Image (cartoon, rainbow, N blue to C red; front, side, top):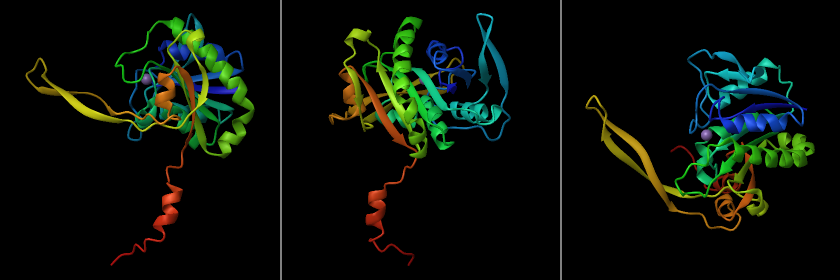
Length: 264
Ligand code: MN
């Protein structure tokens, strides 16, 4: 079993090394990750510039490769480097939740989606604090080590489903609550939530007298549907959501064919 592992928090993130260590118990791990934090980079990739690749060592041992690109770049380049000799594409563990509408912005989820786009079984892991609390999870390695052990257990149960997932062109999105293991309720199969944000910008002035705008804002419309990943995560569940790379609304498409749209 060979894993291609990436993230969006960067090659030095504690969530990445914790997950690499656990995956190594299941097989060979190729780490290719952005050299710096790329959270919120979504599915961006690099087109107009060459990518750089740097070998990275941790504790004197070869750890993986740092790229100058995004998570999607890292997966593309990793697959190229090993001539697609990969069984699973794995992304994470992200420092913070990736739930609901946030999936559109998440570099972590896009790392896994890229794997699915390229035809591989793929899964993203995030360490979820209470959604909307505005806090960042504990940066300490301990929480990620605990979450990585959970991630490995989950993955063990999913590995034989890999080929079916790849054929269905989906990736899996997992959020593990930032709680001690005994307080985690269990694993819940969920649907992507649809919260809305009230975007707000803090206006300020930089040291050169130029104005800047810094995005803040809050959730104004939470998704309380019982099967939403947001609601389940809040209740202390590990959420597991299958995500399609096919964005088409097939039901509406069928209906729209009856609308008689044409050029005048
Ligand atoms: Mn991140």
